[in-house]
Image 1 (tube, rainbow, N blue to C red):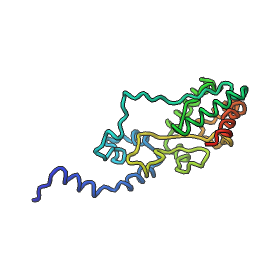
Image 2: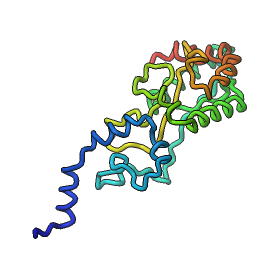
Image 3: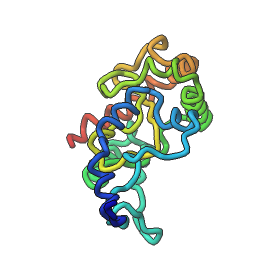
Length: 207
């Protein structure tokens, strides 16, 4: 009988672990994180866990004073001077942060809430219905997957993602999941008057 220490046992376990195979098996289910939950798992797959001893590297301090840039689009199409200022703020936020919050975009709260409900309904669907849209090809108009960087990130995140490109060529209603099709008609009602704002910003930003 050969005695081994805890560290030695962990090293042996690590050497036998096939991370890529486990990731591929997860991805092949096309069920995402919700599929794991629905299956009743009692142990989280290892590729979701932080294998590094430096846990602080992935921690976010509650004392941070950082705030997400907020871009106000009011006056974008009416005041040339204000338009230049807005474009400059978009350019700076994009270069410095990579994202920003937009206000006064003209999309009503009720529409945003309905869109959120549609996405929730999509995730609550039977897995077999969602599989049709599962892909890692982000050039498709409609994309559903779990962890866009699944095979590159040090550890996976506990999330699934569903998104659709709505400009400049939005998908046809029949290209969307059935749960979202009726909300596509709502988007049509404000699409022409509000996408011009975003396209104007993109046109002159030149990031």
